Length: 76
Image 1 (cartoon, rainbow, N blue to C red):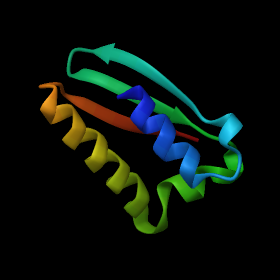
Image 2 (image 1 turned 180 degrees about the vertical axis):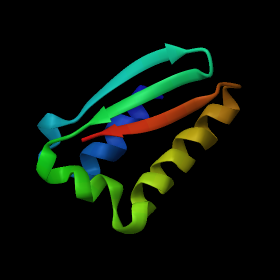
Image 3 (image 1 turned 30 degrees about the vertical axis):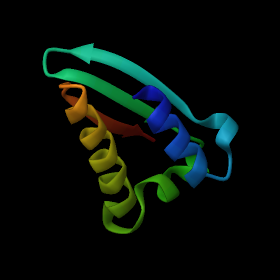
Image 4 (image 1 turned 120 degrees about the vertical axis):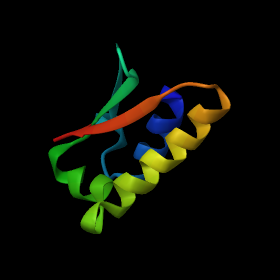
């Protein structure tokens, strides 16, 4: 799942070497913290959060197959 977030994020940004995904376990499930270059934050979030919402939808759909609960947070 972490690889999925990384691949999608690297395809969106201008500085793919600055993409880092941290996996954090909590009581709700797994949280993937995505950090990118400050100049690329807008590209990952998109207009009115559409790209971020689509990213979360893809990851959540993939997690359903594995019976996991996941969420994606974008650190600026």
